[in-house]
Amino acid sequence: MDPSEEVRLLRDRIAQLERQQTTNSQLLKCRKALRAELAHQKLVNDHKALQTKVEQYQRQQQQTIDEFTEKQKGLLPDPGMANPGLPDLFLVGGEDRLFGGAMSYF
Image (cartoon, rainbow, N blue to C red; front, side, top):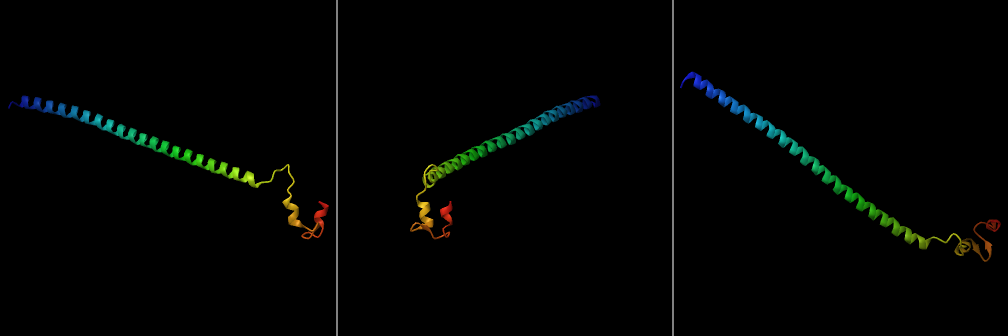
């Protein structure tokens, strides 16, 4: 083989390898970008799932509070009504035995 032909073939091979290297480099960049996008999408999906769980927990919490409030409504006296059971705690036979008559002043 002629030395000039050999040089030409070597230059062609070098050019081919450089093109392949450029292509490989671009592919690596694309793969890296794709991996980053997939990782980002996973984070977005995880965030949405957690947000859904938080919202569900908050609804359950509010429901529990509402149920508790409803139950308490039946237990609390009406502020506009006198509480007939309260004097019975302190007064026995019309006089104040617990406080030595002090309640009659209130």
